[in-house]
Image 1 (cartoon, one colour):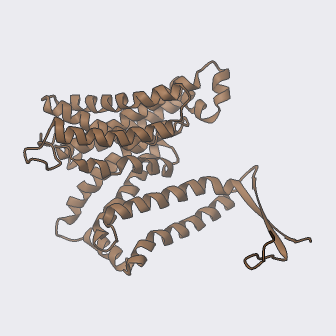
Image 2 (image 1 turned 180 degrees about the horizontal axis):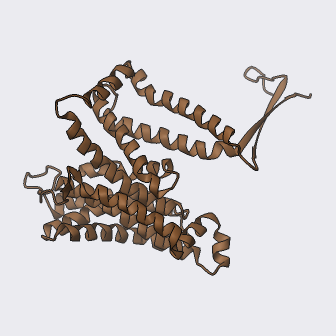
Image 3 (image 1 turned 180 degrees about the vertical axis):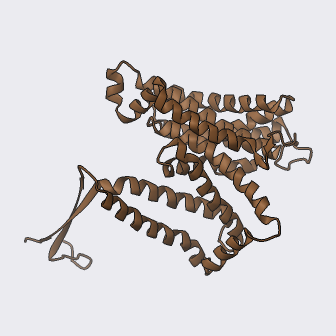
Length: 363
């Protein structure tokens, strides 16, 4: 049966695309691509406001003006931003540890949730906050053991770590409703044990700990044999195997370290709230850690600045929630997606060139 040709369109030319890797990338090319991506990302970040029919610049101006006001808003917001920054710093550093060895441990949110559960267990047992820290990291590591076992057998950690995140949501629901039910019936919140994390000079102690951990991880990467091997596995697995190391074993160790650090983020959040709730299922700090890690270029020393940048966007989204459709959570996740895509594009696009050829159609 022959086509009638009603919906067919024959152009006189054929456009062909080909992508070729470049041997070397000039600084000018990197700068040009980065500038173009910054402009594109700026436009994309304003789209939710435009969609809502709101001029974004007065909203941004009002947000900035509140920082110099005398209403006490700035001091309260500083603590909130420090709280966000700390959680994203810890999960971002966990991401750096995993991703540098090409362990795509994207279920960091799940390990954070288990870390919060471990914190609650230690708190209800009457343990000191330092032991709550240990419990949070231990719960994060234990939750990663199934992923580690699957990693040994060759199963992708991308799928398994994400599945453990979804299981962690049901685990959280179970402990909130059944293990430590609230005194207020079915209200999804455990009894409060009170804030257990020390506050130093108006900021959470874990912010200082997180920054120090960034220096410790950087030292391990550049001054210890384990760090050298972990970087080698990420850059050249064949060379690591030739040198007598087991890439699979190294990846398992890296996975457990990363998950324990994400569990520590759970301690940070839970110890400042002093209770558990189903709200932990939508905090997004673990997923934000992935964005933070890539914005930092997988450099441990750049993680604090990267976490602060993302935390400021989170805080601004919370401030502008009245004018953004879906509230701050929707905008924050949207911003995360834009930032992650831009960072990944900035890392890959300059290394390739697109060749476009227009040829006459024959026949």
